[in-house]
Amino acid sequence: MSPPLRKAVLTAHLLASLGWVGAVLCVLMVAVFALRSSDPAVARVAYPLMQSLGWWVLVPLSLASLVTGVVQSLGTTWGLLRHYWVIIKLLLTIVATAVLLLYMGTFARLAGVATSRARLSAEDLALLASPTVVLHSSAALLVLLTATILAVYKPRGRTRYGRRRLGR
Image 1 (cartoon, rainbow, N blue to C red):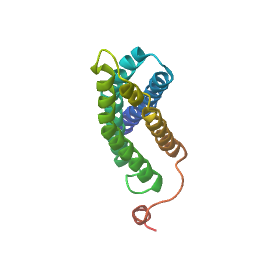
Image 2 (image 1 turned 45 degrees about the vertical axis):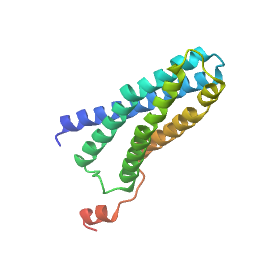
Image 3 (image 1 turned 60 degrees about the horizontal axis):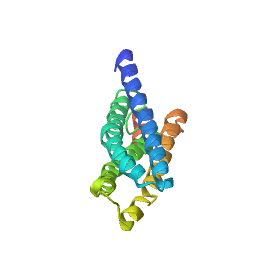
Image 4 (image 1 turned 90 degrees about the vertical axis):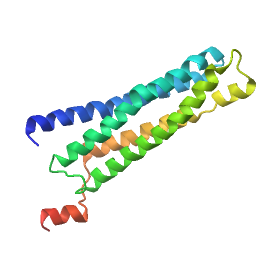
């Protein structure tokens, strides 16, 4: 990969990855706000907002991070399978993206409950008061920060394939 192309892909990867972290923080803050509020009107706004953030921000950024990360690794000397930190980062990104895609169903369910009736029942309010979005967003943030730390510190350790490619 030529240096200008490598820098462009790296820039795209950084923007997507750190944008994903920022979007998770936004969802986390909206979820905390919704969880702490006793006003049903807040839930009517918060849960559809989180669902929209999921489809329009989180999912595209997660996929962009995954694709640009793979392209970046294939186009540099780090390689996709040569270093353990790259493999771990790839696995973290794949798992986080898969969990997000599965969790979008939960967002849809919560948004549907929040907007389904003129008056929310006690059962609806109990469902909306569940800390699941806060817990999942916090876990996602931890996973994404771990991937970021791996990218910055690049711990030593080559895979067997990486050692063979090096000629050792």
